[in-house]
Length: 130
Image 1 (cartoon, rainbow, N blue to C red):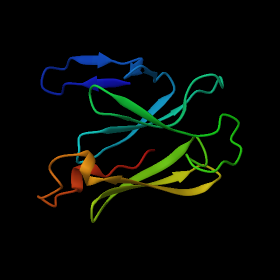
Image 2: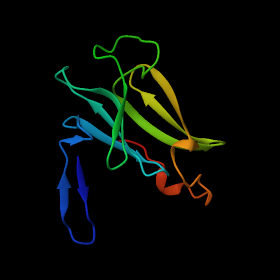
Image 3: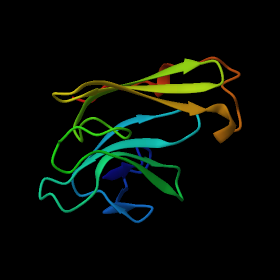
Image 4: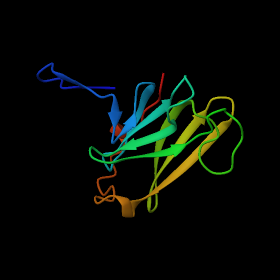
């Protein structure tokens, strides 16, 4: 992953976020709490698979099965084609289109962030992966 400073033209290259490898990663969204949400899918089958969040310091992973098999909990598939952020009472939801397995919805409670979306402006926080 790269972070580009549009003002200076400088960039920063990340091979991991919070200790989780991001070699096979696709950024999906930045949410109102400042988290970057990234799809990680190691094609070699040995690295992390699923949805990664990163807040600038810490990271976490919502896993998906390495072999693409069905599972209870976690994501139904490691590859996420699109992700939309939806504000709801008490937090936000991440709606994901998981390749060959349908939709997955993750609720993130407002207690995990401080501003509570008081402005109501959600336009910069919705993204669709190519």
